[in-house]
Image 1: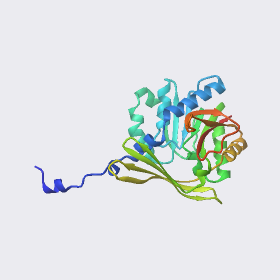
Image 2: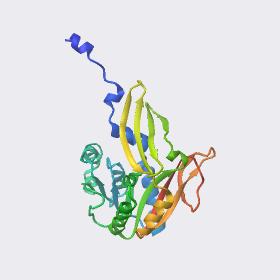
Image 3: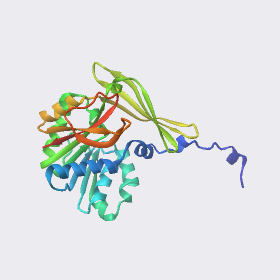
Length: 273
C-alpha cells in the first residue's frame, strides 16, 4: 500500500546519491595511462620490468590495483593516513580483484613520512599529493625516506602542475558524461606559496556536490621540486606533456630540459636513485 508519506517523500538528488570517490576517479584519474607511463619509463631506463611498487597518499588504492592486475608477479604497497578512504578502497577496489591479486596488494594505514615497507622498484606520489608537505625541509626529508625505501636502481615518480593560471584564484569546469567536474582555486598566497583548492561536482539534474574534496597545499615549481629531489640524492628529469595540433595536451610525456610558458601544464618528474 502506498501511503501519503511515501508519496510525499523527497526524491534524492543526484548529488545526494553521489559517491565522491567514484566521481573523483571518473573526473581526475586515468590509472591505466599512469601505469603505462611508469611501467614503460622504468623498462627503458633500467632494461628490466619493475615488479614492486609503493604508492604513497594512495587514496582509494586505484593505482595499486591497476599495478597488480598488470602482471602475475607484480606486488603493490599502498599507504594512506586516512582510514576512511582505505576502507572504501578495500570494499570497492581490492575485494573486486582476484584472490591471487588480493594477496599481492598491501594496504597500509600509516604516515608516509615514517612508514617502513619492503624495498621497492618504484615509488609513486601522484595527484600532487606530496604538495601537502608545505615545508621545504619536511619535503626533502620525505624524499630522502623514499630514496632509502627503494632498491638500488629504483625510481621515484611524482607529478606537478603549473603555468600562470596555477597562481590565480579561478574556477574551471570540465563536462563529463552526466556530470560536470569543477576545480576551484579559492585562494593563493604569493608569499607562502600556499593554495586552497576545492573539487565540486554538478549533475544533470542541477544538484551540486560542493567541496567534495578540499586541499590546502604548497604550489611547488619544477625548479624547486627537482632541486629538492637532487638534495635528497636523486637524479631528477622532467617529462613534459606534448601537444596535439590544437595545442592541447595529448597525454604523451617526453624528457625535456625546456618547456613552454603555457597558462596551465602538467608534467611528471622521474627521479632515479
